[in-house]
Image 1: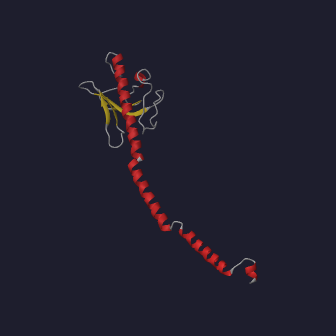
Image 2 (image 1 turned 90 degrees about the horizontal axis):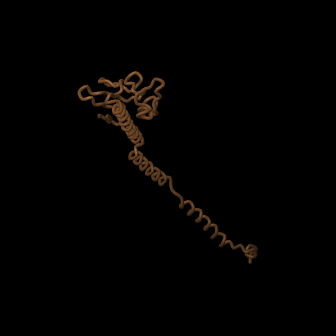
Image 3 (image 1 turned 60 degrees about the horizontal axis):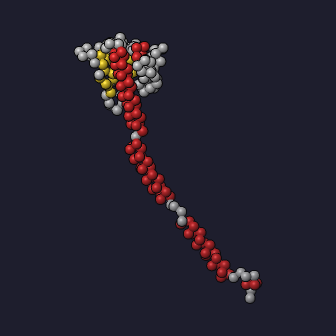
Length: 173
């Protein structure tokens, strides 16, 4: 009996443990993902993200939202002008002529006639300097919306010339 056997150490067992440890180390390395697998997964995720962004298209969504605001503003302006006319025996605000002009201090100045009695405040185009905020009539202002009175039938048209996505936004009454 050897000294190692007395201590409980068997050389054969030790070699087996060493082989087992080496095998465990080898299996430990094979349990992870390879670089190729990770790159393939990242590539697939990138393609899915690109498809999703194309489907959602945030720029188009913002343009559609701006055009929705323009439609609402054009209707509100035209309603205010018609309410003014209804209260004034059919007379429309003096600033509206048969020539197309911007609703502004320099163009069709209807602010004093319709705001705040028929509309709380004149709206402005989302792409204007005011970025869609309401107009302050006490200073120079420009809504970036246009208005015209027909010379044949006295119909009024309000339009949004800065509409996006090649849309034409105008309302005639």
